[in-house]
Length: 306
Image 1: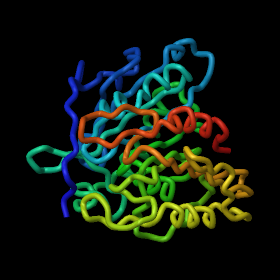
Image 2 (image 1 turned 180 degrees about the vertical axis):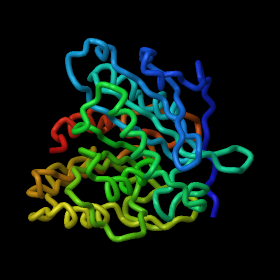
Image 3 (image 1 turned 60 degrees about the vertical axis):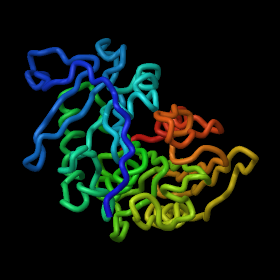
């Protein structure tokens, strides 16, 4: 079944094919670029923090994956993620899913059995993100041990799939308002730290599991995280460390390589990025109980690949 259309229109400034592949050309602070992967032209928005040209350090990289119907500019705008990257001094790349062949050209990710065009056409998004990470690490002043993934909705599903298939490239993932839909056994070659954020009021991807947006079945969030706790070698079960009127926090600790799994479940909000903006009148209200950006970046800073 095709997914419903939830799109916002944005003015796209200075879009074009970058010439930053030329080693003699200084990279831009913020640049919309393209690359070839699996026979397709793939696009992404790259932002370098203000201190990038100081040359004082290798910077962390966060790969930010939009949801169904979104794009790089939508993620950047609605979640104020470039502002976070500039404040905290890390590089952020916003890759884009392939467009469908329908009238509106909705972008999706092949996260497994979801979603829409990318899944139905078996688009190699794992290969694209792997190649993107490798190219960015090779071309920019980026620490390969501090590459992180975050994603909203279908983008969060894609982050789970990437954690399964290329854990050697990823220091940690952060998933928002999503489930895991890989449709295969989880057997990563190394433990992956995970922070997951969801709302009790999300009906598009219910945290308890069930049929949601597009008629897809989504597994319960806690069952997916329990699967990951086994894959991560966690020796203790989930512990609820906060449970108040605003949100709960459940943690899985004592895992291999000192990784952890943190699960925030808010009592307000909906299918939205906590602390973000409501992008259109029909959209769900973002939670105000927590700030996704701050929680995600604080979590990421705890981890680095060996």
